[in-house]
Length: 133
Image 1 (cartoon, rainbow, N blue to C red):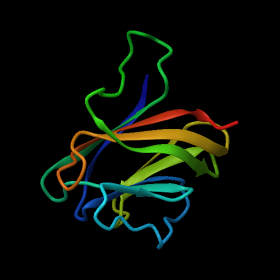
Image 2 (cartoon, rainbow, N blue to C red):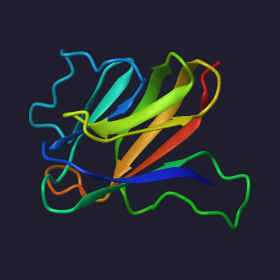
Image 3 (cartoon, helix red, strand yellow):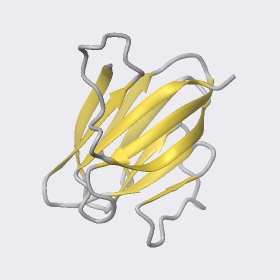
């Protein structure tokens, strides 16, 4: 079920998602389509050529509800520590930021999928699978 979404214009080819805390300086993409640490994921995106569509999902309760695009490629599937139970999505210049509460603070299993991995990414689906036990 879709619980949120945002269209973001980016000047830099990197979009961050994860905890509302500062992104660690050590999180570097290098040549990969995505990189992660314990609190954030950096995703390579297409800069300055239109909006980047980001959709936020939880596992579907309603079989008729909106779902992540099954044709997207998963670039991250693992735990993220969300210290206040909120996930933040924004550009590296911190011009645009979207924050959504997904539960209590703690570690969440998260899956990030993109329409085209690498410098042509223009759509991202994020699935918050649930709190890690």
